Length: 264
Image (cartoon, rainbow, N blue to C red):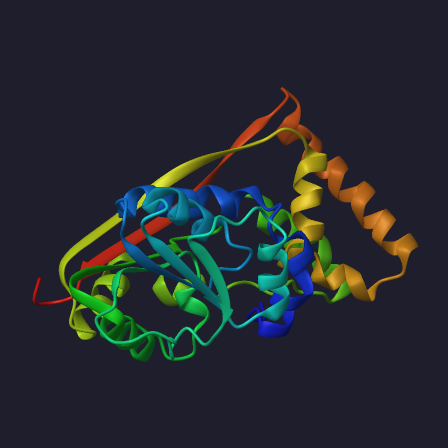
């Protein structure tokens, strides 16, 4: 399947914040990171700002969060959400951070590092921004989200010759890959963990909303409305057995990785 591009991210920005699996994983990463009141954090590849808002709540009025993204459309969507004074958004490259060296207590990236062309260079840049002993924290996924749902949708599109773009999470799909990246960038005191987060979907219709609002729905934009309606009806019908007993729970296989800058 094709990799998601910056243009793809721009295209889905208006509905990106409604994707509950991303919000769930971003909030889990912030909890796991453990930011403290008064600290100063960067949130790289913030998207619509879910992790940034959780960071801002954790550091409080005495701290600060600078949330960056390369997608102006994502940042526009983020700014439409309630924004506390300690949180700022900025259009910036995640591998060229607009901050002085040794100025941050933490750098966080929720499901975004794997989008950056040179992940090793990005991690070195994040280490530059950290004070001695500061923490870098990022997440990825170890497999398909909400399996078997993505496979069912891909099979529905296949007869039309359509393939939904996917995030390149497989670039950091194992704890070993995350460890190698952190070690090569000079981080120490590594923490690595995989957690299976339960995500409750109330109905097949909610799953359809996820499709339409996210990357999986981009191929629909090239189709006539009548064809989209047909696909929707057929897909809801094939999902019906999964929701026969009501709401259903699916797994989000979240990879969590952290390390500290030397010298602390």
